[in-house]
Length: 144
Image (cartoon, rainbow, N blue to C red; front, top):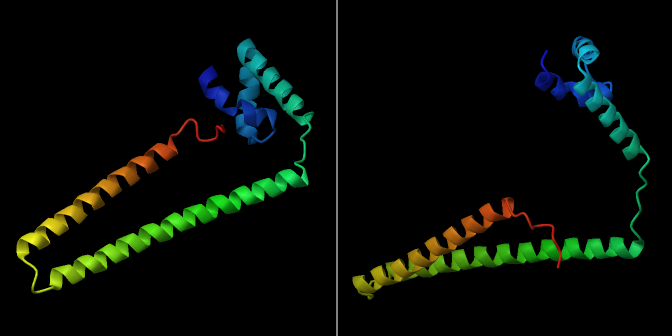
C-alpha cells in the first residue's frame, strides 16, 4: 500500500478501531515507512495530550446567560416567522379580494399585482441570498 492509502487508516490504527486485515496492512507498511511511523507517533502524542486536558465547567451565571440567549434567539426567529407568514396571508387575501372586485379597472389590477409580484420576488431573492450566505459565513461565531 502507498502512504496516501495508509494515512486514511492511521487514526483508526492509533485508536485500535481497525479490522484485523486493515490493521495488518498498516503494520506491514509501518515496518518499511519511517514517515508514516512518525505520523503514528504524532497522533499518539496528540491523543495523550488531549486526554490530559481539563475542561472548565461553566458557572451557574454563565448557564443562565446561555439559556436567556437561546430563548431570545428562538423567540426572535419565531416572531419573524409569524410576521412573514402573516404578511404573506394578508397580502394574498387582499389581492384576492381586489382581483375579484368587479368595479375596479383592469389596468389598476395589473398595476397592483405587478407591485406585489415585484416585492415578492425581491423578498424571495434577498431571503435566498441570506440563507445561502448564512451557511458559508466565516464570521458566524465571532462576537463583537
